[in-house]
Length: 530
View 1 (cartoon, helix red, strand yellow):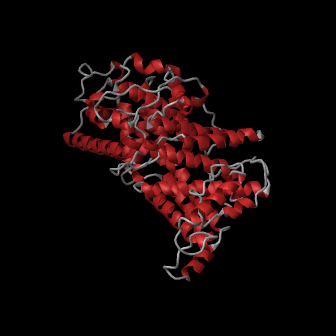
View 2 (tube, rainbow, N blue to C red; view 1 turned 30 degrees about the vertical axis):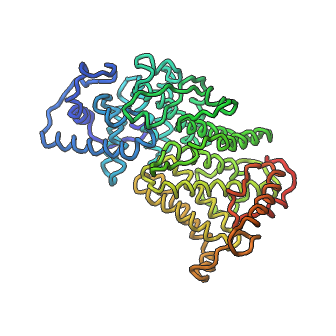
View 3 (cartoon, rainbow, N blue to C red; view 1 turned 90 degrees about the vertical axis):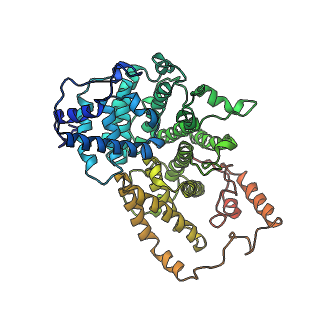
């Protein structure tokens, strides 16, 4: 039975055990440098035809490659691929790795493995960090497969064991391993991944408590992946308290990309918690808004660019930036006018909160939500290989697409092409991701159907125009190039009204000048943003 109570038609337990043991037969626990509790053995071995053993080994190797090529870079909690065989993970964890990798192949194999995974995990009494990692990876995979309830239950299992064995304490990772070892770093990463996954998986439920975020933790922050996978000594890790004090430091300190990702996820959690409240003070909303802006303002130059000078993508930093954009959408969308513009359809990721705001407040929240969705599409245009990204991004892609669609219904035709290109970019990403993750299938269909319904008239008008019409620089600037004379005036006018509002981060450099100009802010009086 699954944690959700459903039965699976996988192979029987004895066959699963025999298959697993054939893969681990060459690993001797006595020769392994890893703790003996992680090299589990099964009491019974069954003989199998050599042809079947060869096929099973081939499939496992293929799943492993797919896992490390596609899934691991986005959720790097296990040891690097070069150390995987030596690490000799328990059979149940290896099976979860196979299950994760199998999702990158056509459907069929993953369903067979899923039954075996649940059989192994639910029947195994192990209460170790490896079991935490197994349940955690399984939770991420199940969520991405749109099996949200089972994902939440798997994450609950991982969290229960993690808190039981003390993974929220810094001493846990160094009890059996040197502080600067890969294994100690792997355990630290596991705890923080558990926290991040808890926050993202909780979005559609609107009720799941934050257990990891509600307990004290002094676990050191993860290092950059370049050290983790570079066969070199892991540098001294930073404490969360050090990271929080960075704004007060005399000299700027560059922390790992994982540090900024953790803080981004914590801010996202604060947004989710606020959206669950029926009543709250204006200062609570403003505090989170300040945190979102401060996160960006305090990024060092080295962490502002997702792609380095060699064209390499920092996946963890990419996630950090997209989580902030996602958090901003979740904060502003339910307080905007945009939801009323969409067809009535059930979207588990669209945030809804009680309360009524004035028209001017809703307008500004709409602008902020649209800007956050634009940033999401901008990040994707820099990192278009969507298969390499975390499937956790799927809800943000869906939300971004729906936001852009709603915005097209209120904006003039001058900026339709901008919104259309963002929507098609997001649809293309969802289309590619749905080949692997079923969660993207439902999101893709929602965005596509809404776009087809709401953009039909605008498409007709747009298609009637010349294919290469003159570019409009803004709604107030005459056609021609921006020059040294008119641009400072534009920026100065925009900044003067922005400073008078409650959203000082509405920088004209980041607001699409075709969609909005300074005049839109001049109509907004002084107001509270709640």
